[in-house]
Amino acid sequence: MMEEKGVPTHVSTEQDIGAIIDALGEHVKTKKLWQFYVLDVEAEKAALMNAFSSNTVIPWTGEDVSGRTGIQLAEIVRSSALIQGMGTFASRYVAHVDGRVSAGLISAAFGNLEHDIDALAQAWARVVDVLNVPLYEEWEDDTRAALNNIKGGLKYVHLEDHGPKVGKVSKEYVMHSPTQIN
Image 1 (cartoon, rainbow, N blue to C red):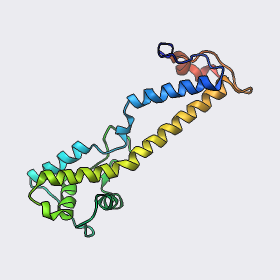
Image 2: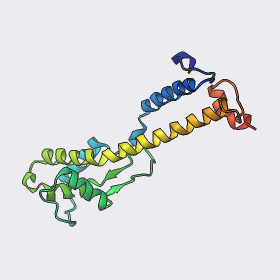
Image 3: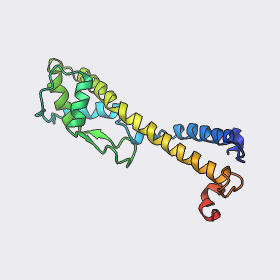
């Protein structure tokens, strides 16, 4: 697979490692692993709208939120620990806010839109977008750390004088490398 994509399978230079890490980084992006970190904006809107349509809105009892910006509302959501499943990485879009709670919060914040559920859902989507910014950053940081660790491993195994200097990088090599390195 690496050869088909023009990625070196024999590591003899730092540039070879760079090419491998670049290709791996691109491959990781195709897996959309950020979905394990962030809230699903469309699902959040749907949950909020469902709470309104089923008349199950939980009235907001926290601090006064009327007239607050999306950024301020996002901070209130974070500080009130309303995001469930965050940091568990148990499944894609596991992080979420109970739609009944988000409906109550957004109603309290935008009482002037009380009868316009679509506008309230859009307002909540903007808050969710703000909530997602640091979660995307966390995914990027974690991905960067993982790639840096792999890069360090490749450098040790293939280039460093005190490393084992093993052969070709392949799926079989990666799957069995712990038994190959003594």
